Amino acid sequence: MSARYVNVLYKYNIFSPALTIRREYRFLNKVRICSFCRALWYNNAVSIFEGTLGLSVTAASGIEAVTKKELTDLGYAPGGAEFGRIPFEGTFADAARCNLFLRTADRVYITICKFRAETFDELFDGIKAVNWRQILPEDAVAVVNAKSRGSRLFALSAIQRVVKKAIASAYTNGLKETAETYSFDVIVVNDEVTVALDASGTALHKRGYRTYVGDAPLRETLAAAIVLLSGWKPEYPFADPFCGSGTLPIEAALIATDTAPGLKRSFAAEKFRFAPKVYDEARTEAADRIKSDLKPRISGFDINPDAVKLALKHASNAGVNDKIHIQAADMRAFSSRYAHGYMVTNPPYGERLMRGKELDVLYRDLNKVYTSLDDWRLALITSYYAFERAFGAKAKKRRKLYNAELEATLYFY
Image 1 (cartoon, helix red, strand yellow):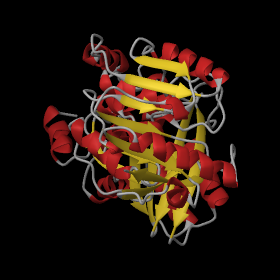
Image 2 (cartoon, helix red, strand yellow; image 1 turned 180 degrees about the vertical axis):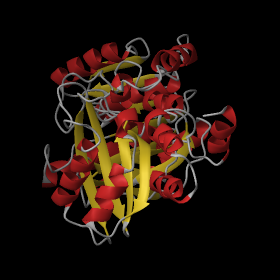
Image 3 (cartoon, helix red, strand yellow; image 1 turned 180 degrees about the horizontal axis):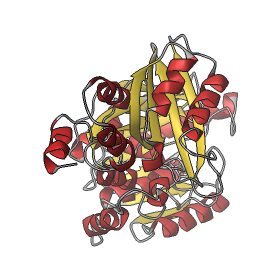
């Protein structure tokens, strides 16, 4: 085949790792292209991991706007959140940057294909049209998770089964499933199918520093979102009088020093056999951005000495133990010589730690401590329905958030 024919294929986007692969597949069958060219598209097309990709990230309900701002700050142009996903365009290297740098996202995904399917036959054909040999090695483990809303295809187990069967059909003897895992989300919304490859693996809230879990743990991604939503800046003091295992002050220290939250962990995409090797470069960028000389005024206190030991251990694991002051102390003893500052905290609440009158007394005493400070701001998350009554003051602003499956409210004073 001459170079002229190859250039024609590139010109009309036939070789591109397009998001709507089925459309290109139909085009190949309609246009007058020799069988050799068609085989070349299947077997030697530009890798799905090359060039501009459709990317997306997921975020917990209530913090999508925070995640979108993070994406914008990293230089991307995110679209509106749909079905818990925020779409944008980027390269495989950009997916690596997002895995490393995003503080509030749950996972990063690479869009493999999009197409319409109203029947299982159409679903099978759409999945089969993808050149899976460019994505999965023959010994890969393919895991399929399905979600459906407003579609004719709604039986999730059947969707998963059909998709996996279609993927396996690309291989003479199916997938051996003895090597690395590739996890796919198949999202069917209004009969439109999107197949997305999980580039993160373990959820991004698992930074790698929290090896032990105390009572009522706060997810790291949510803790980072709370710090960002509080309005705190590193030039101001930061205090958490109920620091528990240290998640809020640790995330504040990571933010203050511009330390990438994913710097101490690995990601699923690093094991993608046919993908470019980009993670060393991303980690070098992350290491270069750390403000190691910064000395923020970040403090964490807890009445429980065992919790304080955990917090100290986790701060050391995160590499910010020299950026945080942590000690055992009762919240009621808190005071500050600074006129301005931020109290950001996750106090005990009824589901796991305290109930009824105990909470009322605790929150009332917290108000006394807070109002004794000069010009401080307070951001506090709790699921206690009567918090404002117990605290004795209406919040200036409220925001519904979710810590795992538990609905809570973030109050601002």
